[in-house]
Amino acid sequence: MLNSGELRKGVKLMYEGNPQVVVDFQHVKMGRGRPHVKVKMKNLLTSAVIEKSFLTTETFDEPDLEHRNMQFLYEQGGEYFFMDLQTYDQVHMDIETLGDSRWYLMENHEYMALLFEGRPISIDLPASVVLTVIESEPAVKGDSVSNITKPAKVETGLEIKVPLFVKEGDKIKIDTRTGEYLERAN
Image (tube, rainbow, N blue to C red; front, side):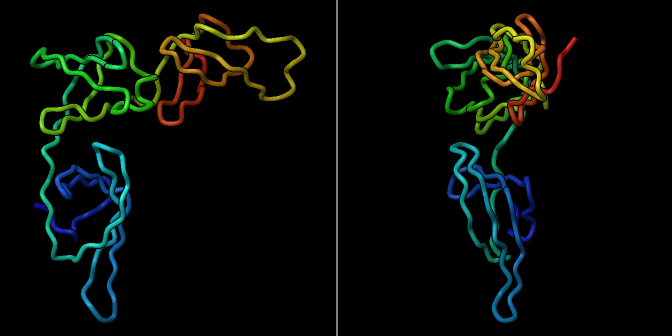
């Protein structure tokens, strides 16, 4: 059990039957009246963000969350299939659950999955991934004023802006938090 005085950024709790993560908080002590905590929480299932005020005497249950190492197998019809590396069970996640994480998933790579009551609800990605450019326009000589970019498509289907010197077949490093080009990879 957690009491509202223990709420900090990143703390996970159950609220109205759903797992939530604290995004922001503020302890408020009024001259008159009782102290309370203003909390901004994100629902781990729907990604909805809500703001609530709680008295410091209120308590919350901790959600039944589990981290598991899983291997991404394949995508079929908007469903992404993973294999639990401990039990060899296969589970799937849909596009809505994965969100933009789907653009960085590589077949046969391992990822850390967050499970709620045995069901995967999100995938933890590394800070950056290395992907191969499969489609890119050739650079035109004389177009190099300063920091000009062009569109490129990588092997997962993600389209990003890259510098003019990047060509098809190049491996590039992409930031998974922003979706931006970082550098050429070896």
